Every structure is written in C-alpha cells, then in structure tokens.
Image (tube, rainbow, N blue to C red; front, side, top):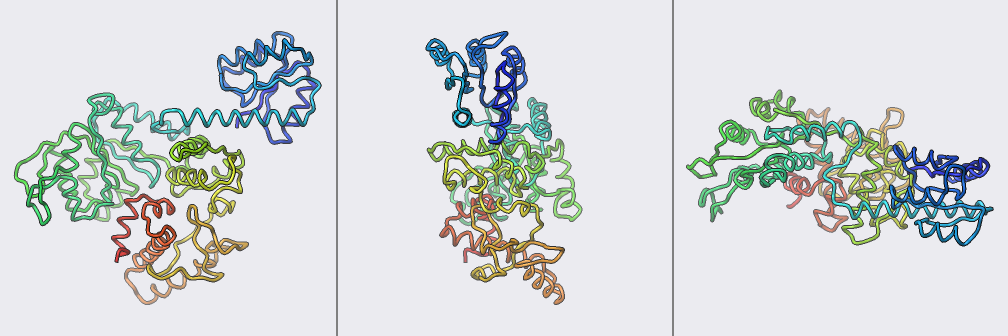
Length: 509
C-alpha cells in the first residue's frame, strides 16, 4: 500500500499524525507546503492525502483542486482550525473525502484516515475490475524483457520457442505474439489455434494436427480439417511440444521445412500458411540427448527462444497480480471484489508458488469464495500458505495405491493441496524433512523406495510416481464427487492434464 501524505505547516501536527499512523502500521510522508506536494506527485502518489487548509505558500483548497485534477479517485481529508461554513462547503465542493476541524481527537482522526484508505483500496479494485483485461501483467525486469521481446517480434512471422514452468503463462505469451504480429489483430486478423500435444492420445494426435479424409480409419465418417488447416493465415500454438510422439515429430518437421502436409488417408498435398509457436516446460536439449526428441526439429523450432520466468523469480509482481485476480474472480462470480491487507500480500510474496501464476489465480478464486470478510487477513489464506517457512521446505510425493483409501493415523497427514485442509494438526507438518531425517508419510516413502530398490525393481521411479499421481487424482475426484474440472482446479493443474493422467493411470476403469 502507498503511504499517507500529511501536509501541514505545523510541525507538531505532522509529528502527532505520523506517530499515530505508524502505530497502526501505516507508512507516511510529510510536507510543510503545497508546492512540495505537487512536485512529489511527478514521481509518486499517496494512498490518502491529509492536508491543512491554510498554509504559507498556498491553500489546502487550491491544493485539493490540483490534486483531484491529476488523481480524481484519491481521497483527500481537509484539516483546519478555522471551522467556518465556507471552508467546509469549499472542501466538499472540491471533492474532499471528509472535513476535519482542529483541534481533533487523534483516535477519530486515525479512524477517519482508515476509512479513507479503505475507500481508496475499494476504488482501486473497482477500477481494476472495470478495466479491460490486460494481456499480461508484470513490472519485474525478467517480465519486462519478455515484453520487449514481444515488441521486437511484432513485425515478424519467425518461429518462436517459449520455455518456462507449468502455469507460468506460456500460452498468454503465444497469444500476445500472435496478436501483435502481421497475422493477428495488428495485421490480417488471422486465427490463433492452440493444441496441447500432451493432452491428446497418441493415436488421435495425428488426425488432430493434420485432419483426415473420410474413411481414413474406423469411425472417420466425414472429412475433417486439422489444426494446421484451421490456423491457415494465422498462428498454430503447439503447447508441451516436448511430449510429441517421435513419429509425429517427423511429420511436423516436414511441414516446417516445405510448408506442405497431407491429411491422414489423403493423397493431395495441402499448403500450410501457418506461423508455428511452440512451448514446453521440459529441457529439449536433454530430450534430444536422450533420443526422445529430434535434433533437427529442435533446431527448426528454436529460431527465437523466449524464457518465461517462474513466479518466484518475479515476486515483486505478486501484489499487482493478486489484486487483479481478486477483481477478475469477483467479476466472474458477480460479487464485490475483496481487498487484501499488506501482511497477507507479504505472506503471498514469501510463497514459492510451484504452480506459478496459475496457482496464484486459483488461490485468489478460492479467497473470493472462502474468505469470510471483505478484507483478507493472513488467517484467511489457504492452508498451504499458513505454515510460514513450510512453503520453502523440500517435500516428496506421498506413496499410496491409486485405488486405495487414504490411510489414517498420526503418520499419514494429507499433502497440503490448494483449498484443502491440512490434517491432523501437529507442531511439525507431516512429510517434512527435519534435521535431514524424513517424518510422516515421507518415512513410508523412504521404506517403500528402499524395498523396491533392494529388490532390483527396474521401474522404481515409474511405479512410485504412478502411485503418487493416482492417489492425488483419486482423492481429488472423491472430494469433488467426480467433477474433473473442479478436481483439476483444486490440484492446481489444467483440465487437459487431469484427463490425460486419468487415461494413463487407468482411473476410468
């Protein structure tokens, strides 16, 4: 929150208000004349302005008019020792929030300033909620680098590879690249078509990308245009390109090389007038070394690479993102937007957000629904944010059979998941590493991993990972009574991801 500005030529008044507001944990900035205030507005602004009405070098009423011309929504409180009708009328006609006669009761003055702060925050949220949806938000240097890169690429159709962790906003960057390119809104208004290659079964992906002719395979009753045809004249966004099957990589390389492709079952070559933007959370160089990704395709895609920073690398953006997502959630739900206190924001900024911006958005949606009051305090934050340094502790996956009920007892606490309670309560969260030794379900994990390793099981990683993912999804579906989208929301993953995992883990059986 921005500081409270105090303007008074009486040093004792400034001192008393500064101390009283500091006790309430409000930051302040003081001025002795209106001229300095107007100069300071060139590079800063207050949350609330508290100004005397008569000062050497200018009037508080004149200052009110000039400040309101620059910051119409700023609450201004006018103080004066001359409690006459003209002063009061002039103050309110000029748009003052309140009129405070001197000598004033300090408790009342602080309460009045608090109300003005709340009004200011409410106005900020309202303005944000009424504003057009911004493409992307970010003041952090790493995000400014991304914005500059998008600007430089605005007149280009070059292939771009976007890398970054899941939930960091890679599709938003792809959409921005399209919108500001000659193919997007700034040019021919071509289509933007997105496909997540990891969310579509291997045997269907080829048809999704390239389309199929009637009778090409069982069930192909009609001819179908694929994503390349749908994106003609525009942009095709290939998300999670690192998961594309190897044989399809060859077909994609051919399209990128000569601009032609065939529908499945077709014999007539089709021209692909498409700009390709790809994205992945994986290390493609490592995938190439492992033989899972074609090196020539990697070089074809890696013409321009944009790395999107994780949210923990741009913590200074958390406050603005939080307030934006709270306003967005409120607008979607048709309720008044909630405000969040500075201590709550600080707690959010200390969290590492493994799910990145998507996880923060989910938390803001949860707060909009679950926080009991209009002002969000630290105690209202979801459980995974309540443990202080717990967010930074290293934790490992739980081990359980995919279709078995979650075990109960003091050593089997539930892994903290967005929106879910952490139980049972204990001085130390279950599953953390204390002094280098695992506790709770991590101890069970250690025992099971040791048993499998010592037995010579060749697929220890795959076995334990499947059990962990299966139990998480199974439990989430139980909590949401089978509603997949809601389960994915609670887990902090995408709905395509949960659908793919359910198929891979056989949870539909």
